[in-house]
Image (cartoon, rainbow, N blue to C red; front, side):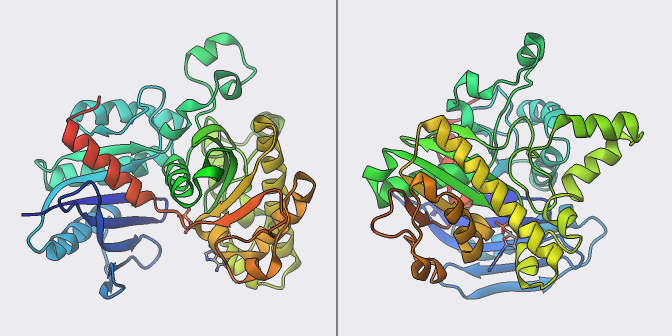
Length: 395
Ligand code: ADP
């Protein structure tokens, strides 16, 4: 009986999933891919690898997250055919200092990961909710955790450091970085597409609802824009990105804002949504003629280019720029706007190629090759999960 692995990628408003057949070699074959949308009208959609729609239905549930995971499991089991599901792999947002590699999710590791919730109060519970739901539904099914922070363990201690008193650094107050599974995928794809380029210096722009940049040298992360939390760096859909810490003190001390109110504002009411007052969704802003939508888009591109220049400085230059995730893969105008601001660093955009969403969107004479690569975090999760299952627990 052939074996299969289910990869789950739980985000703030959706759970993406992908089922892989492991076959007999080291490779993995996509069987089916889907999304559980946890918005106002929860919806489960899935397509087979050939694009055939396998499922597209709404469902109502008091607790859409738990009920949704049960729905995904039911759907996947229906698609297993003669395959045996050997494990479920998860994207876990925070691995802290301890988890630098994927691990088997045992009661002990889950407890250790729960303790990291203080480092990612909104994201870590979302990562662990499906793990707990599956452990309750099917306690014998092995689960593996793959960490968004792990790819950044190669970052130099100096680059990680905050200029705070030593004792806080020892307590783990440092920059961790996120979106690591996406960056790992892009670094791997780049080395397949262009080994020569992958051996040099690349800035990867993961521009989705959450957005960050990563400086990758010889396939390894050397700097990134997210820090201690997933709030830092770029302007995002609803998150503020880098902000003067004095602003936070002002809200707390001068305006008497409660800490949880401040947290909600910074994570959920700021960014594109806060600036535009319309939406945190780039597609909606690009379709709007409202000047506030334009201001939000311009701020997004300005700040992203500014941070890209800072990462270029960490590496002493760069030869490649990769755009990925929802905005990076699909918004030619954001790519154009960012690239124009990076002209002085050797970026020369080919506008026709960019409008056509070509693989390479820079001109042949550009000092920096600009590429668009679709990310695939689920395939990285499946690959790591397989490795953990074959070698046993890596804790
Ligand atoms: P998540 O971080 O939730 O995985 P995605 O990578 O799916 O997010 O990216 C979502 C973002 O991509 C949203 O802001 C969405 O509006 C934007 N987006 C998707 N398609 C387009 C498009 N064609 N043009 C501009 N923005 C787009």
